[in-house]
Length: 262
Image (tube, rainbow, N blue to C red; front, side, top):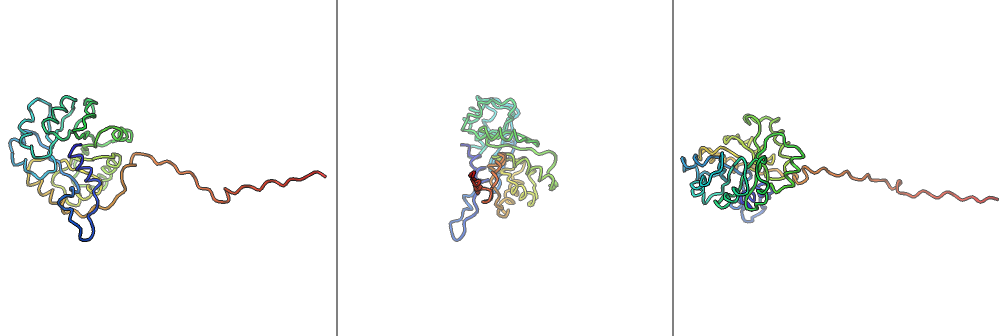
């Protein structure tokens, strides 16, 4: 299973910290919201310091696939968790990505080979924007797709209640990882709002290790996330319960008295 998907699953299902004098979970606990740094292989090659940025995963953006296009990047990130964003992915490309050390792919469903879904070694995030329908959500849930990489419309700054409600409405339909493209310079209150809305990962442009370090520190200082109901039944309508009847309605009617003719 993809290491990124394992981490994102723990982000969403993480338990509250232990009570009493038990051993601290600070070192082993997953982040309350993951950071994915997006950049091109050329940008990584030009600024090698970016390879040390404190992101939870790197996302290498490719406009097209060519053999050897990831040779330098894979060597630079050999000890880090990384994946690839590619418009369409076929089964041959998926196999080559996995062999190069790629852990996950972000792809468009239109044009990508259905055989990609059978590759258990790669995590799979489909790209999407506003307008996720219930039918689409059911399809995602029914296929071996691990989640979505969501790009909201417009600028998130400043974050309004309406924008947050729109994002929450989209997130509530997806029963899986929900990674969202955001600015790297989020206000702590906005960051907390996204975390509480169930956003499991932030997809940010990786241009400065310093900016990502500030974001990482802000995530570490967030207060404990309030408990919320699980999302497993988010897109499954509840069955109507049968009406309850009172004892009087269950009482048998007395049989009619029999009369005999004289």
